Length: 357
Image 1 (tube, one colour):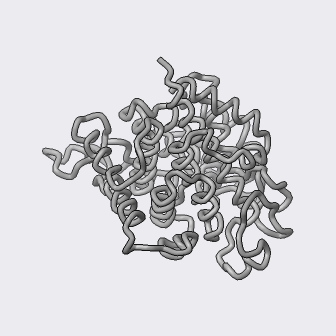
Image 2: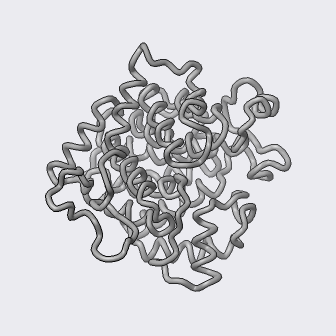
């Protein structure tokens, strides 16, 4: 039976991710914060256009780069198939996305192709390898940026969520740390869609699901260490990760965000504390801090993610999904919804997925 509150949170998560990503299209990848301020002023408060010669140059304010477009591709597959269908998802990449890129960074829709997608394109298109053999070791959040839609769709089924998210991740990224951190983020997002807050107790709630067998994550003390795949090393999936640390860390970060003796002010400097680069071990901690600190304030959360520079697009996208889930679609400011390219079309798409949660 559908639940209106869950539907609102699911729509908020999906639209929050799309909005966060689009907010950072203009000021994406400024590692020199003085240059960022010179180009966009002391505080970025809305959608902007990229400057000439920058990443995503040519896009208009409110439009999405490839990260947003790949999330939307995943969402369309979920809607049209009624759930995650790996064959359909891969077909869409083969037929709709890969013909638009050429394996170089600055090509295709959205103005930039991620490292993992470039690697996958080369093995899949140029070398004709099967999907099972085209994943690479890029340590970015690229898989999480699309798989978050799968997490929303299966928010009330944590075991299925974890399996499908990890299955989707290894299509392009086979590093086990990336897999664990991506699956952990998505598992947390699933709890938020169900109505749980992102606070110091989030890790305990996730670990309770692990102990009950509802969430397939290794607990280190499992008898026989049977999580290790038999034979040669291979991409690890839900239930095979080396430890539960990806679940445990987020609770500590959320605790710090609420501790008056641990302050990052202004909050955008979270990018300096946890690091500005693209790797999962920089991105997820910053996202968790912002989500916990601004759990009820979508705009403040995503704008601090954007204003921190560096890989602010992933930071804002992933933060937007978490806080969007907590505030629901009604909690996202109307100006940010209306300013998003094809806003009504995407609202309908998000709503169609949310109706099946």
